[in-house]
Length: 142
Image 1 (cartoon, rainbow, N blue to C red):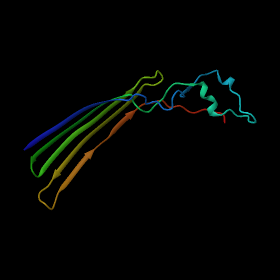
Image 2 (tube, rainbow, N blue to C red):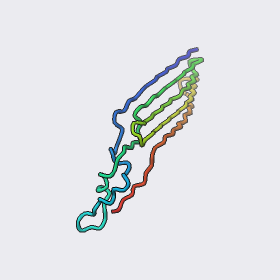
Image 3 (spheres, helix red, strand yellow):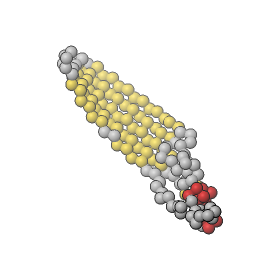
Image 4 (cartoon, rainbow, N blue to C red):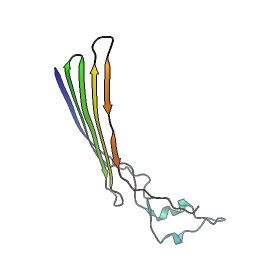
């Protein structure tokens, strides 16, 4: 009979996950200064970049993670494995953004090898992920 386990904690620090930079929100009341290009009656989206501010991203700046695996081998022919992976990410660097990301993944496995010519393996894993973020609708004339 043999019992083994493995525990891992990790931390990721992402320096600059923002893309695109500085073009999330538009300041109100300043669109009156926009003029259409020559020979056109429309104002295009790229002309509004000077009015935009704020960063947005779908990536965290800090990630804490845990991996836990436990293995139980009651005999040389039978093996049971159980484990969980967890990941918690966040990004609150910008005042417009309070980003949270969570991931949980429990897993189970069973292996049975009665002889050299036959083996049976079964496993189960479920991934549960949640995250929040801001969604905006692009508004443009052109």
